[in-house]
Amino acid sequence: MTSDFSRNIVIATDGSENTQKAISYGIKLAKLCGATVHALHVVDTSSVSQSWTAGKETMHELLKKDGQNAISKVKEYGEASGVEVKEVLLEGHPSKEIIDFAENNDIDLIVMGTLGKTGLDRFLMGSVAETVVRNSKVPVLVVRG
Image (cartoon, rainbow, N blue to C red; front, side, top):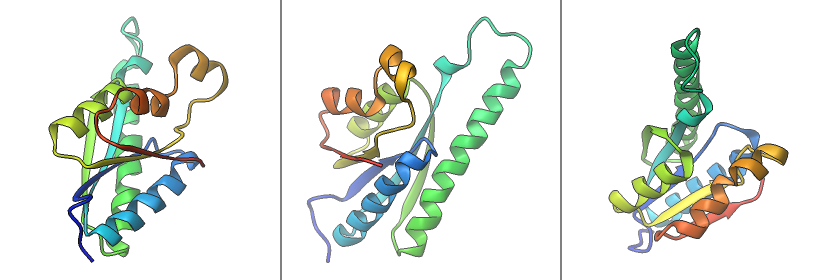
């Protein structure tokens, strides 16, 4: 079954356990619609302090590697389900990059979990999912972990 409803779906992942259920929903939905999935991870450059000197490049490379691993898992799951998955690794502020990517790449739906930040981090930085829901012009499906 193919549908014009969703041809391009973003699955935003931070690699945490909280996103696994969202990945599953997104892949199943893409399969039903015949959609292409864009597995998206944003390396949060705000997490690497600009004042760091020693180890800054190493930390940045580790964050990129973690991001690549996260989107590779989405690709593996998608391919096993017969869904085309394109890997997208961006850098910047996660909610802004997710919204910008969706709005500039003909995306029909953003699927995301309640991403990893909790407690004081969430209070200080705000929830990525909440920010995307509030500001995206593209429909957003948030799946609780």
